[in-house]
Length: 110
View 1 (cartoon, rainbow, N blue to C red):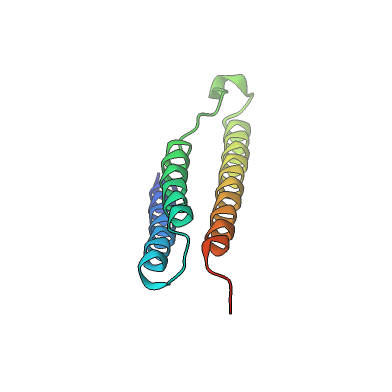
View 2: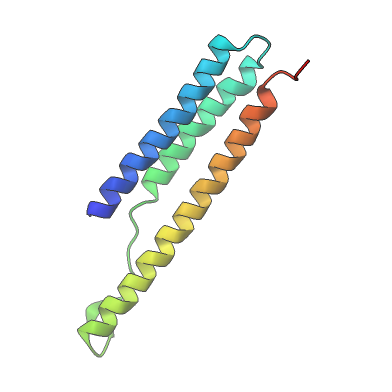
């Protein structure tokens, strides 16, 4: 559980920082597309909610399905690593998309 707690804190911090950057851009940068930035903030909120909801997952096998306790723990560990890796990849891809949309909302250089 310690890893999940740290992961949840990191997700909150990352999403909060990105949303703050969007809000700062709306207030400080003249010519920024306010609608796109507002949509980015909504997307960040949805990403945070969905990612936090997907952090908990269940291993579909029981210890009695394996010949030894060691094999069960190894399979459980491999499953958890793969699930967290998939969650991290999906989160990073969504963040990259939001950052790309944030850059697209900025005014063109003169």
